[in-house]
Amino acid sequence: MVVIANSRFVSLRLRVVVVSACYRIGFIAGFSILALFITSQHIRQETVYLSNHNADSESSVFSTNKNTGYKVNHLNTSAKLNSTYHVIKSMPNPICKEKKTNVAFLKVHKAGSTTVMNIFLRYAVGNDLNIVLPKRWQGNGFNYLGYGKTLSRKNIVPLPSNETYNILCNHVIYDKNAFDDVMPPDSTYIGIIRDPASHFISASVYYGFYRSLKNVLFHRNKLNFKDFNAKNENVLSEFLKNPGDFRNVSTAFVRNRMSYDFGVNPLLFNNKNFIDYHLKQLDKDFKLVMIMEYFHESLILLKRILCWELKDILYVPLNINSRKIDLSLSTDDLQRLKRWNYADFRLYNHFNNTFWKRVEKEGATFHEEVNHFKEVQKKVTVFCLNLDQSRFFFVEKSRWNNNFTVVREDCVFMTLKELPLIKHLIISAWGKYYSWLGYQVKDKTSSQTTTNTAMNINLAHVPFVIQT
Image (cartoon, rainbow, N blue to C red; front, top):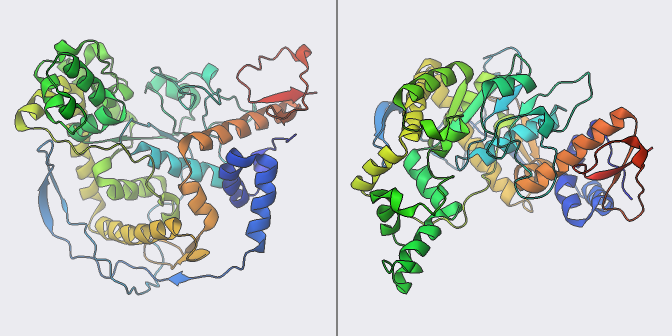
């Protein structure tokens, strides 16, 4: 029988490691084995000196996105990665005064949002912040704050009455009034989008839309058995020629899905006046809409806006589509897609433009910091994926960061799968809430537990048994 302790009383680093281990082998065994392992290891430190000294000189260029044809004016942010680095002894740039800890991140489907979500969750756990979490801890879509709907207090884990929520980053449909009802007034709103053509292809494969189209075409004798089992770009082309011929195939995750996540009603997907109005409202609400294709640039903007440290935005890529099929769209297909996914193309075009205007305002030092971050990020990713090489990864102070150390527990958190991590956080949040109410909280999976039914509390969604 395991008592779910208040997360405030568990050391951060051990708690992060235990998230993964406890989910697999049970909380008691996980805590015991991992604690013994961590304390028994011989600790050695490996120093790596990083700087942006060898970054390419900056020049103003135009680049064209191969899928959409959008042109963006920005500076060359490529960086050469040599085997030698030198140390910059200067202090980090004093860009802002105080870290922002109240953040609402709109987790958009298939737009790199799982990786960003991990960054926010890691920051929340590391700084003992309250996360907006769904009540349920299991079942289909349990990790959603709203499955096809917006945020509501009745669907989230409550907090003690004297506390407020700080971080929101689970899937939910955006609605400003609903978000404002939960988040503090000074919250910073962050979103993320992706090139609509690549988003359409990725979502088609990931959510089974592409295979469903294949099934329809196969039964209509428009696709033979050999083509059915091979990559076939004509499948998406056939659909885009006449989407109405495939009414029995769900388009929920491929039809203007990003716009839907940003709160656009499907009935208004093609309404130009409404899209114009909605984009203006989103401009007012969101401090930053990240662009997946420019992920490092997006994270540096995020870091500067929130006054965070370089270590706070480190990541290891998550939720990469293992079923990825390298499909492409013809010029005609792209034009048809632009009409069919009108809202998404408008959304991307608008925030792509505002993104680069924001980058230009940051000045030349922005791209220097991006190059430096890329160097650090590459080394940290190698370290985290090869943990047997060393126990610590030390990053020297530079113009862009104070010195810091990445340890094994950091890597564990950065590589945790979303669902077991969310489940652990939900259980911890419920434990904290009922502990605040004065009840003893015990794991429901334990064989020796009893429930006091006289408490008149609905326990259907609670992942443990409450005892008085």
